Amino acid sequence: MDIDYIAVRFWLDLLQLIGIVVIGIYAWWQGRSRATTAAIDRVETHGRQAREQQDVRLREHNDRVLRLEEQIGHLPGRNESDMLSTRIGEINARVAEVAAEAKATNHLLAVVHQHLLERVNNARVIS
Figure 1 (tube, helix red, strand yellow):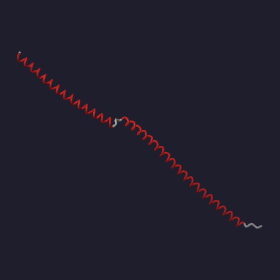
Figure 2 (cartoon, helix red, strand yellow):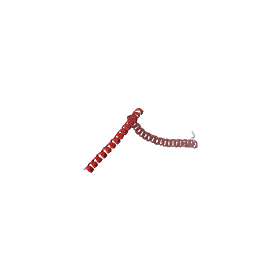
Figure 3 (cartoon, helix red, strand yellow):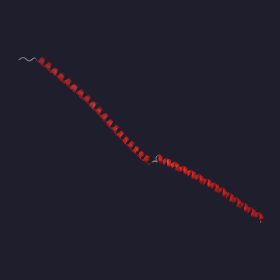
Figure 4 (tube, one colour):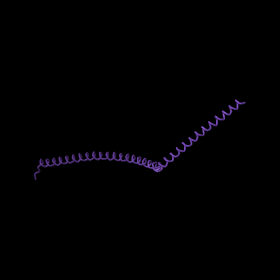
């Protein structure tokens, strides 16, 4: 039995080349997979942080809206505003009446004062 060492070496070299190519492709694929996984992890982390920030802002906004709704609930409505406007108008009319009466009373007091001064002056002139 005669072994052809050149043919055996050829086939071993071919197997070795195929093995190296397979290992190279595997290493390239794993590196690509790691880079892709790292990029996906970064995107997921960024997305999670953005969602958390958005959730915080939404909670703050929701709290502000609830406070505003509560404050608006205590404000007078259209009917109450109309009633208040009517009452303020009535009060203004009453204040105007009181001011007119005070002016008339002031005038009457000035007349009485003038009369008393004239009476005192006349009494001094006569005596």
